[in-house]
Length: 498
Image 1 (tube, rainbow, N blue to C red):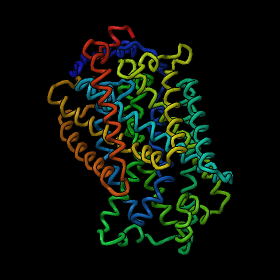
Image 2 (cartoon, helix red, strand yellow; image 1 turned 120 degrees about the vertical axis):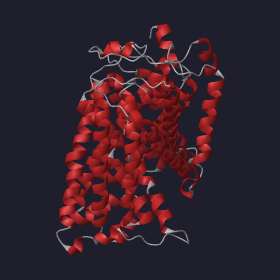
Image 3 (cartoon, rainbow, N blue to C red; image 1 turned 60 degrees about the vertical axis):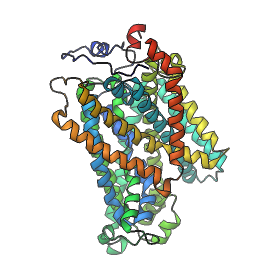
């Protein structure tokens, strides 16, 4: 099996981005219309600060109490390190489907298959889980008494709406995404500020600031620090996806310069907003028992305690548009990864997934395929609810494993000398690349270990192993012959004129 990196010829500065793409062996087919704002919005929406807080607050607070808010800073440090690596690679290899393309260009096609499959599984499982959660919030918002079957059908409807928006084209998808992100900044953040003002208007309206520094004893005889570290995984999940804008590099104007910057902007904004929301909502708790009773939607209960049910409903409604933007961005990212791998003939039925609509310049069948996989996952809950949630739990583990493989690929490529020479004026880690990658590799190894061995994630390891087995079977059966004959990999598009 051919497993060598395809060397990238250092490119001179050029004004023609189609020619830049041609240096990698590809013809420009997607609609290059994404600017700075949209690039930032995609990264920010994929992280989705509001989604992270609304879905992760309860787990963190009920596990470790008020001090769990500081775990976000621990997660932030890890993602700052990862963003340096992602920015470094995007500036040198600005291709759609970054998780596959970076490893393919640096190390080789076989390892690239695994990074691509892991990322694809992570995005599909993640957006399906968010869609399921969103359908539950919709039921609560409108007072629907939904059965599990009804919730699944509503979730499929939500995914279908996001699918149709993506089918229409990247311009429309990014416009809708921009609106969702704008609402998040104006309404959700504004509501948090309002809650803070009301809460701190009287000493009786809020908890003491000391609650942020006072952790209780964890259950049993386990040290509290273990509960605190377990709680850190929630905020950690809340920052996954900062590099998502790299997946639409072939649709971004001046991608080498724009995307590295917007990654850091999206990460900074997410950290500030998430940390502020966590602190405010912890301190704004007036009735602990009521929040505990509303464990499925603690943020809604806290807002109701401070400013009343009407404003609470409005905030939840706007928050749901932010969650919808998160799903929209995830589909956008997943379809570009599918298209990129199919363009190199790395997937079964690649000729289907790499089709691009001449009118909308969108990978039509990739969008439909991602929607189909998500629908199958949702319907699987009707057969086995336990299996459904185990598959959804694969999301964070698969993405973190992809991050780990990417950092290992950087270390290998640095030793082999296959990292492209940077263009003048673009982001470059230089001599810091190896120590940064080593720190990232250690961090992601620890996170992956936690997601496999901690009791809260029992079963994750088996599902993860099943995914690796499937990828390995494909690598050594169908893909092996393709790579040997030159019918797959980064040079395939050149020989076939794709």
